[in-house]
Length: 483
Ligand code: 4AD
Ligand code: MG
Image (cartoon, rainbow, N blue to C red; front, side):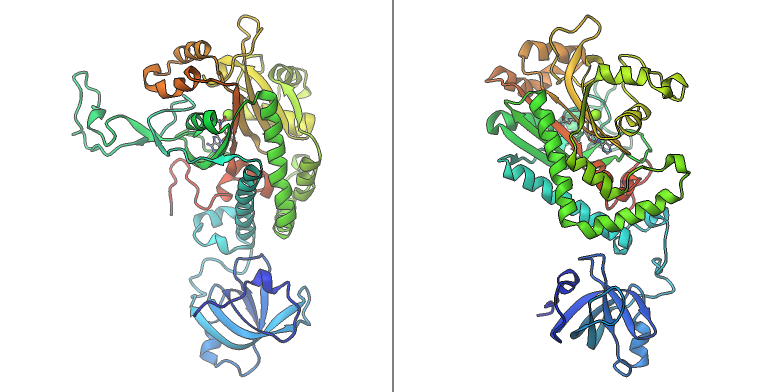
């Protein structure tokens, strides 16, 4: 058997009693031909390997370079060095994979995040990205744990669909038709999708919600957690063309229940990471503090990362209506001094500058905004009763987070068949193709609600990474699909 290694994370918790261990990993540094710092990705800490004089010949010593992969057999002894309790006195060292130090792009020095994005295939091996992706994993695990504990069913909704759930027309087409102009056309000149693989026009999903609603009308509480795709041409620090979304959908829930669940959910997964990934968060906290120092004083965040996360799990989110949000903006010094680029009035789709004002300047905490104008939200959201003409609102809710803006979008769903049909027609949704969706309202319709949490946005929030490209292993953004 080749692999009887102990992971460095586990090893570092052991007492040094001279016990024999095998460790494998990649060299971070090699000092004085004597001290190897070895890392295996299980923790941001390295184990120090001590190479006694005469153990290795010169040729082997030369092969121990930053990035080389090693198998080390040795004894665990107390360390005299600073910052570590134990170290390994090597008895044998085998170079599993050489690494040409001249050509290796990751030098033992600070690299910019922009540079590391270009070598995303290697950045996993850095301290920052080690921490980011361990936290990303922990969040994913905590998400499943949260819903499993509450008896929610994990539903796999399709990735290829024929519908545009959000109706925003930002889908990636899926086709096997030739692109050289020879695809068969109909009499009116349009492409004949009868000839396509599925016999109709299909695309990558933008959301699993509509299929999630079907499952919720049988299991009551379900969630999805999968990739979603949007061809929106937004080159920002918060948008990806391929991102992961968690979408719980609950029968017998109204908007209030929905907001309560979303808040409890976010606090639960953050608390999980604070408890289980303390060292990673501390490393990311220090990284962020360093980044903040580069900014002018008035642009720096008030809280450190850990402080911010602790604040979020200990305090309720602020809850306001859309109308209240607009009034806060209209009365703000920023508005009066014409600091906003985009206009503010009832009916607008709030821009990121408005959302950030509310959470970062006004409330200084996460905010749930509910009851948005019906005209700017999706067709499936439930119409609120008793609205003034022209000021119709829907039972929608968005959660806005400091530093990020929108992290959650959700709503109570329109369960009344006639009202829904009316809304679909107004939004030009092809009703004939959506009969399967309407069936939930025809047969045993119930009040229900749900929301979508952008996974990368919550990973950004928890890790303090400023750019969304730095919290997904291989980012897909306009004009960029490397690796
Ligand atoms: O607000 P959105 O568009 O809502 C939906 O898709 C609903 N079907 C969700 C539901 O009710 N089940 O997207 C939900 C969340 C946003 O709040 C945001 O966090 C994230 O998904 N998101 C993106 N994340 C990264 N890149 C993008 N291009 C994103 N678009 C949305
Ligand atoms: Mg939204």
